[in-house]
Length: 302
Image (tube, rainbow, N blue to C red):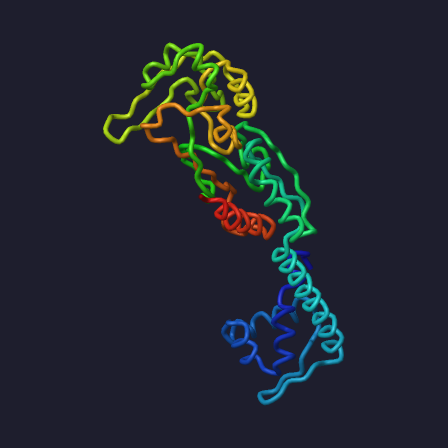
């Protein structure tokens, strides 16, 4: 007997015994009576033993069938238990959850959500990658990636928008006092600019105005950096003009340490997305995290 045929017919056999009828077993399993009969006959032929004494009006287990039925029943129950354990495992968040998130966004907005998540689901462990780099969700093995962007790349991944932040063009009052305050974006070509190198075109800055065409300015990069935290530090030390999302700025605008430029232009909108591979067979740990992000991030909306 081939191992691939080892369990063939056992479930149907137990159904026939339990329901005392081939036709009832057929109805319960969604098969035709002829299919049930053929499957049972193949089972008897394969093991070389008569399992049932059958007449046109009744059926009963043979002694060998009685022993075989008890073993089959145990295996079917064990399989149901295994599936139940797996289903429970899928329903209850557990295991390691690997997440990537930009540093500033993670420290200020994600950390409280993660703390709440761990309190709710103690069987989950977290593997956090706080980095401004553009990670590959699949290649780098992440369960979930939090991404902040003004324009999301086309993707086959699931992208759920969590919230939106404004993006500002900023500088210190000291820098502007020394180098002058630009009143139009085109004047940025005469200034030192701090550029975010994780962007595809870090030195091309776009500005939108209600009554004008969009303006694109190719700025001179004085400092190029792949970390928004470092950008903030450099602009605070008066090294140039920078474009930054509000989640990196804290209270720097309220305290006057930084000031915004071009306020008659539309501020850039930077959307934050939860990105994950697929909705199909989505694990409970990821689903629970996404649900919590959606509810808790929305609470932060102004």
